[in-house]
Image (tube, rainbow, N blue to C red; front, side):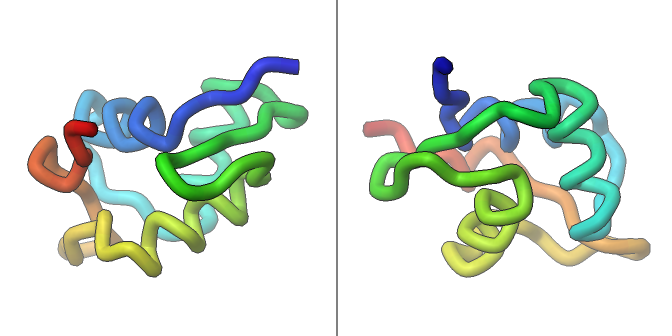
Length: 79
């Protein structure tokens, strides 16, 4: 099974131009990438959608918004 980079999730969020809650982001990730998808980042491997969202939040990748949070291109590392 292939793994999806967390950057793709951040890019999905930017493209949607809408705020998310933790639950709505997990649901959007599952809808976009599938329930069995696994994710990785520059430092983590084999994450579920929920684990990825928790990790991205812990790394400050989300920006508070009216009804949840969003992200911005400058939150995506370039290495």
